[in-house]
Length: 207
Image 1 (spheres, rainbow, N blue to C red):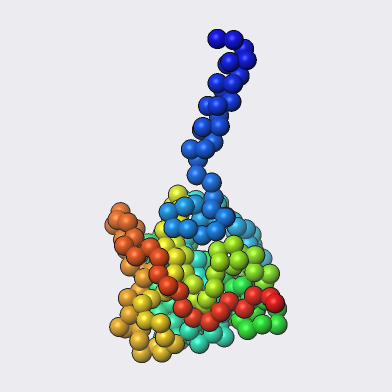
Image 2 (image 1 turned 30 degrees about the vertical axis):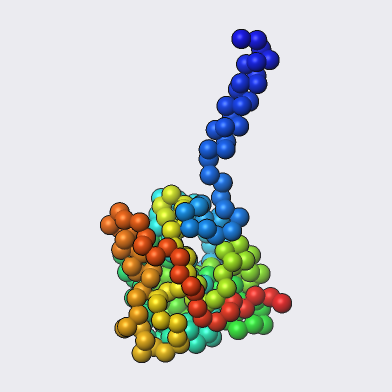
Protein backbone atom coordinates (compact mmCIF):
# COMPACT_ATOMS: atom_id res chain seq x y z
CA UNK A 1 0.00 0.00 0.00
CA UNK A 2 1.40 3.36 -1.00
CA UNK A 3 1.95 6.13 1.52
CA UNK A 4 -0.77 8.23 -0.13
CA UNK A 5 -3.26 5.37 -0.02
CA UNK A 6 -2.46 4.72 3.65
CA UNK A 7 -3.08 8.39 4.42
CA UNK A 8 -6.40 8.39 2.55
CA UNK A 9 -7.48 5.18 4.31
CA UNK A 10 -6.60 6.56 7.73
CA UNK A 11 -8.45 9.79 6.96
CA UNK A 12 -11.55 7.90 5.83
CA UNK A 13 -11.46 5.72 8.96
CA UNK A 14 -11.17 8.77 11.23
CA UNK A 15 -14.07 10.46 9.45
CA UNK A 16 -16.24 7.35 9.81
CA UNK A 17 -15.37 7.07 13.48
CA UNK A 18 -16.23 10.71 14.08
CA UNK A 19 -19.54 10.31 12.26
CA UNK A 20 -20.44 7.36 14.50
CA UNK A 21 -20.19 9.50 17.66
CA UNK A 22 -23.50 11.30 18.30
CA UNK A 23 -23.06 15.04 18.55
CA UNK A 24 -24.82 17.02 21.24
CA UNK A 25 -28.14 18.25 19.92
CA UNK A 26 -28.34 21.97 19.25
CA UNK A 27 -31.97 21.82 20.36
CA UNK A 28 -33.51 19.46 22.89
CA UNK A 29 -34.59 16.16 21.38
CA UNK A 30 -35.48 13.02 23.31
CA UNK A 31 -33.08 10.22 22.51
CA UNK A 32 -30.26 12.63 21.61
CA UNK A 33 -27.51 14.08 23.82
CA UNK A 34 -28.94 16.88 25.95
CA UNK A 35 -27.55 20.35 25.16
CA UNK A 36 -24.61 21.01 27.45
CA UNK A 37 -24.42 24.16 29.53
CA UNK A 38 -22.57 25.80 32.38
CA UNK A 39 -24.44 27.99 34.83
CA UNK A 40 -23.86 29.71 38.15
CA UNK A 41 -25.98 28.64 41.09
CA UNK A 42 -27.47 30.68 43.91
CA UNK A 43 -24.31 30.21 45.98
CA UNK A 44 -21.97 31.37 43.21
CA UNK A 45 -20.79 27.87 42.26
CA UNK A 46 -20.35 26.85 38.63
CA UNK A 47 -22.44 23.88 37.48
CA UNK A 48 -21.79 22.12 34.15
CA UNK A 49 -24.23 19.52 32.87
CA UNK A 50 -21.57 17.35 31.20
CA UNK A 51 -19.65 17.20 34.50
CA UNK A 52 -22.67 15.40 35.97
CA UNK A 53 -22.32 12.51 33.50
CA UNK A 54 -23.02 9.25 35.32
CA UNK A 55 -25.90 10.78 37.29
CA UNK A 56 -29.53 11.32 36.39
CA UNK A 57 -30.31 15.04 36.13
CA UNK A 58 -33.71 16.71 36.37
CA UNK A 59 -34.09 20.25 35.01
CA UNK A 60 -36.97 22.38 36.28
CA UNK A 61 -37.70 25.83 34.88
CA UNK A 62 -39.26 27.89 37.64
CA UNK A 63 -40.63 31.34 38.50
CA UNK A 64 -41.94 31.85 42.04
CA UNK A 65 -44.41 34.51 40.86
CA UNK A 66 -46.15 32.17 38.42
CA UNK A 67 -49.49 30.75 39.68
CA UNK A 68 -48.77 27.39 38.04
CA UNK A 69 -45.48 27.16 39.94
CA UNK A 70 -47.24 28.34 43.11
CA UNK A 71 -49.76 25.54 42.61
CA UNK A 72 -47.07 22.87 42.84
CA UNK A 73 -44.95 24.49 45.54
CA UNK A 74 -47.88 25.65 47.66
CA UNK A 75 -49.27 22.13 47.76
CA UNK A 76 -45.85 20.58 48.37
CA UNK A 77 -46.00 18.63 45.11
CA UNK A 78 -42.80 20.00 43.60
CA UNK A 79 -40.90 19.47 46.85
CA UNK A 80 -42.18 15.89 47.05
CA UNK A 81 -41.10 15.28 43.45
CA UNK A 82 -37.67 16.79 44.13
CA UNK A 83 -37.10 14.65 47.22
CA UNK A 84 -38.28 11.51 45.43
CA UNK A 85 -35.92 12.20 42.53
CA UNK A 86 -32.95 12.85 44.78
CA UNK A 87 -33.71 9.68 46.76
CA UNK A 88 -33.25 7.83 43.45
CA UNK A 89 -29.81 9.45 43.09
CA UNK A 90 -30.79 12.24 40.70
CA UNK A 91 -29.37 15.75 40.72
CA UNK A 92 -32.15 18.34 40.57
CA UNK A 93 -31.41 21.69 38.93
CA UNK A 94 -34.04 24.41 39.34
CA UNK A 95 -33.37 27.03 36.66
CA UNK A 96 -34.56 30.63 36.79
CA UNK A 97 -34.44 32.29 33.38
CA UNK A 98 -36.44 35.40 34.34
CA UNK A 99 -34.66 38.55 33.18
CA UNK A 100 -33.93 41.48 35.53
CA UNK A 101 -37.05 43.56 36.03
CA UNK A 102 -39.35 40.73 34.97
CA UNK A 103 -41.52 38.43 37.08
CA UNK A 104 -39.56 35.74 38.90
CA UNK A 105 -36.12 37.35 38.67
CA UNK A 106 -34.14 36.86 41.89
CA UNK A 107 -30.58 37.07 43.10
CA UNK A 108 -28.81 34.22 44.85
CA UNK A 109 -29.82 35.27 48.35
CA UNK A 110 -33.50 35.49 47.41
CA UNK A 111 -33.34 32.16 45.60
CA UNK A 112 -31.91 30.54 48.74
CA UNK A 113 -34.55 32.20 50.91
CA UNK A 114 -37.31 30.85 48.67
CA UNK A 115 -35.88 27.33 48.80
CA UNK A 116 -35.69 27.49 52.58
CA UNK A 117 -39.13 28.96 53.23
CA UNK A 118 -40.85 26.60 50.80
CA UNK A 119 -38.98 23.52 51.97
CA UNK A 120 -37.70 22.99 48.44
CA UNK A 121 -34.99 20.42 47.83
CA UNK A 122 -33.13 21.20 44.59
CA UNK A 123 -29.47 20.21 44.36
CA UNK A 124 -28.78 23.65 42.87
CA UNK A 125 -30.77 26.70 41.83
CA UNK A 126 -29.23 27.95 38.60
CA UNK A 127 -29.54 31.67 37.84
CA UNK A 128 -29.97 32.29 34.12
CA UNK A 129 -30.93 35.99 33.87
CA UNK A 130 -29.78 36.29 30.24
CA UNK A 131 -31.83 33.26 29.27
CA UNK A 132 -28.87 31.46 27.68
CA UNK A 133 -29.70 28.05 29.15
CA UNK A 134 -33.43 28.54 28.77
CA UNK A 135 -33.16 29.32 25.08
CA UNK A 136 -30.76 26.44 24.54
CA UNK A 137 -33.45 24.11 25.89
CA UNK A 138 -36.27 26.05 24.25
CA UNK A 139 -37.90 26.29 27.67
CA UNK A 140 -41.24 28.02 27.18
CA UNK A 141 -43.10 27.62 30.44
CA UNK A 142 -42.77 27.48 34.19
CA UNK A 143 -42.69 24.73 35.13
CA UNK A 144 -41.01 23.05 32.14
CA UNK A 145 -39.31 19.76 32.96
CA UNK A 146 -36.48 17.71 31.45
CA UNK A 147 -34.75 14.49 32.53
CA UNK A 148 -31.21 13.76 31.35
CA UNK A 149 -29.97 10.18 31.60
CA UNK A 150 -26.70 9.05 33.13
CA UNK A 151 -25.15 8.88 29.66
CA UNK A 152 -26.18 12.45 28.87
CA UNK A 153 -29.16 11.48 26.70
CA UNK A 154 -32.38 13.45 27.03
CA UNK A 155 -35.02 11.01 28.29
CA UNK A 156 -38.02 13.22 29.04
CA UNK A 157 -39.28 16.70 28.24
CA UNK A 158 -42.59 18.37 28.97
CA UNK A 159 -45.02 18.98 31.81
CA UNK A 160 -44.75 18.15 35.49
CA UNK A 161 -48.13 16.42 35.37
CA UNK A 162 -51.19 15.63 33.29
CA UNK A 163 -53.71 18.27 34.40
CA UNK A 164 -53.06 21.65 32.84
CA UNK A 165 -54.40 23.94 35.54
CA UNK A 166 -53.28 26.29 38.31
CA UNK A 167 -55.64 24.65 40.80
CA UNK A 168 -53.88 22.68 43.57
CA UNK A 169 -57.00 20.54 43.97
CA UNK A 170 -56.17 18.91 40.63
CA UNK A 171 -52.82 17.53 41.81
CA UNK A 172 -54.10 14.32 43.45
CA UNK A 173 -55.97 13.39 40.27
CA UNK A 174 -53.06 14.10 37.94
CA UNK A 175 -50.33 11.77 36.73
CA UNK A 176 -46.91 13.09 37.74
CA UNK A 177 -44.98 12.55 34.53
CA UNK A 178 -41.59 13.23 36.12
CA UNK A 179 -42.03 10.74 38.96
CA UNK A 180 -43.43 8.15 36.55
CA UNK A 181 -40.48 8.59 34.18
CA UNK A 182 -37.94 8.33 37.00
CA UNK A 183 -39.63 5.15 38.26
CA UNK A 184 -39.42 3.61 34.79
CA UNK A 185 -35.78 4.63 34.42
CA UNK A 186 -34.96 3.13 37.84
CA UNK A 187 -36.63 -0.12 36.76
CA UNK A 188 -34.52 -0.22 33.59
CA UNK A 189 -37.47 0.45 31.30
CA UNK A 190 -37.91 3.03 28.56
CA UNK A 191 -39.90 6.11 29.48
CA UNK A 192 -43.41 5.37 28.21
CA UNK A 193 -44.33 9.04 27.76
CA UNK A 194 -41.04 10.73 26.86
CA UNK A 195 -42.62 13.91 25.48
CA UNK A 196 -45.65 15.68 26.88
CA UNK A 197 -47.10 19.13 26.31
CA UNK A 198 -45.76 21.58 28.87
CA UNK A 199 -48.04 24.14 30.50
CA UNK A 200 -47.72 27.13 32.81
CA UNK A 201 -46.59 30.75 32.61
CA UNK A 202 -44.35 31.88 29.79
CA UNK A 203 -40.67 32.10 30.70
CA UNK A 204 -39.93 35.77 31.33
CA UNK A 205 -36.97 36.22 29.02
CA UNK A 206 -35.44 39.62 28.34
CA UNK A 207 -37.30 41.59 25.65
